Amino acid sequence: MTDFARTKSLFHLPEGVIYLDGNSLGPLPKAAPGQMQTVMQDEWGEMLITGWNKAGWMEQPTRVGDRIARLIGAEPGHVVMGDTLSIKVYQALASALEMRPDRKVILSDSGNFPSDLYMAEGLIGSLGRGHELRVVTPEEVEANITEEVAITLITEVDYRTGRLHDMKALTAKAHAMGAITVWDLAHTAGATPVDVSGANADFAVGCTYKYLNGGPGAPAFIYVAPRHADAARPALSGWLGHDAPFAFEQSYRPGAGIERMRVGTPPVLAMAALDSALDIWDMTTMEDIRARSLDLTQLFIDEVERRCPDLDLATPRAPERRGSQVSFRFAEGYAAMQALIARGVIGDFRAPDIMRFGFTPLYIDEGDVIAAAEILEDIMQNRLWDTPEYKARARVT
Image (cartoon, rainbow, N blue to C red; front, side, top):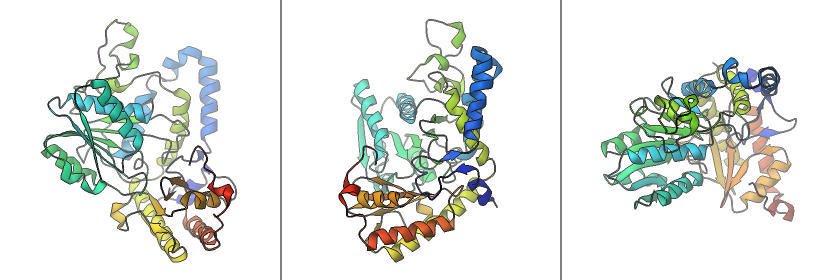
């Protein structure tokens, strides 16, 4: 079993803070500043441009991609890092649509992160070929996978409620109907066991600044199944996705396999921080993470429901149907969350009424959970949230 006390000691956690927002931004691994300093001084500083060869910067996106692959059940050599999650959603969706030219429907659900839907809308507008983005409730997805559907674009865990989709079942249904699957793993990579290979997924994308603790703006990743790797056409035909970028040919030729999904220059410094975070992941397994996560989320649900009857659970009660977060509905949820943050318990708020708490066993334990519930009880029972200060909305909620 993983030594979670040891993993907790490897993160910088401010004194007096219970951090339940790792599903939005993971905390700083203590080794990250030193790792970045080494890359800046010994590589960038001393090697200058020769670092692309001497320090392996050019291979960094696929090397780090293989470290992510272990956590999402992907085959080695089929995950690459770089760019933002929105860019990777666009890439996967555009490539997938070309594989089903006779179909016009992109199926998604109302629990999907809005950015994914925005990227789909933008792509549809650019193509101008009559595609339709069809959005149903999470519970209605399976029934709406029909022979009309070209692509299913699904975030595996609902960012608001924590509801967990059944990737294997939905992928099987999609394939039976002749559709291609694109999975967003932003709220599952590093949070729950994922098996993109075993589920037979076609494409998957995800970010690394949440549960994977890569830091603000950390690079995203994209997975392409081996059967598509040399066939999927990259819509964003960037220089580093070219088969021979330093041949400087005038026309684009896609690189082999996952290399073709590279676009721009790798964010070397950001990936150095992510690399140091992934060292901690080498000390655990997703099975251990999941078992511990379920214990912590169940404890939090039990404690909060016992102490705070005004809050309504938005997360599925069945353990197998939730990710690594717990959400409660409360009409004044924004103000209540600000009161919590002022008391050192950091979660976040999602409109219209969701108080959201993420549970990362790498640095959250039972004592944190109980203490957070006690503080929440005090805030709710004594209406400490009911002040103008806590009701004034900040730009980031």
